[in-house]
Structure formats: C-alpha cells, structure tokens
Image (cartoon, rainbow, N blue to C red; front, side, top):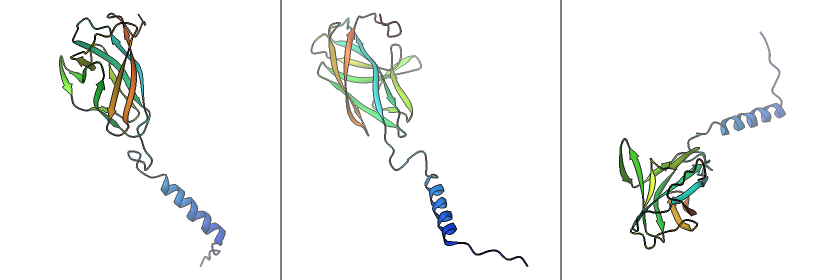
Length: 158
C-alpha cells in the first residue's frame, strides 16, 4: 500500500488561493461586474444645408467598452433632430440605435444619418452646430459638428 505525505499548510494555502484566482477569471465576458460602455465620437460634420428647413448630419460613435449602449435621442438648438437608418433601399426613423460593445454606430452619407428638421436658422459653412447625443447607459455626449461645404467628402477632406 502506498502512503502519501501529509499536505503542508503552506501548500494547502497556495492551492486554495490559486483555485480562487482561477475561478475569479471564469466570470462571464458578456457582463463583467465593472463593465461599462466607453464611447467616443469622431468624424462629425454637417454638409451645408441646401434647404432652409432641413439638413443632415454624419458621425461615428465608437464603443471601446465591454458593454453595449443605445443611442436613444439626439437634440440640438438649431432644430429637431431624428436618427434615420437605411434598410434595403428605404429610409426610416429609428427610435433606438445600438452601439455594440467593441463596435461602432456609423452615420454616413448614403446610410444611417441624423436628420435636422424645422431649422431655426440655416447653418453656414465654417460654423459649428452643437448636438447632444443621449445614450441609455452613458448619458449625454455633446458634440461640436462643423458645417462643411454641401459637397464635402470626408474621405478626401474636400
């Protein structure tokens, strides 16, 4: 019959501590206890409106966090703002738009965009329009959106 040496107290403590650390790392990646969305906005611009009552806006919301968030509304002092998404070949107003964890919400020409209606004034090239993006988890993010030429292309900067 084979006999084993008794486990030393130091070794037992080491095993228990190691096991606890391993189990701590096994939590769900989808919802860590300290998870948050980490939002930033880039590429914001408004082409100079050709209409006295309507304009469009474009930007990218990037989420570097491990939790998704949702854009729930957009406000601005220049007029009413709604978010529109393009589905197939049609455009529709969107109530909430997801900003996925480690992902982006992109508003671009020919796709999803911000629609400014009932303009109180017609923004001119060179000005900045202040926009508040309201998120379900992250609260409000204020963005200064430069007004560019009506034919501005963000890829070329012209």
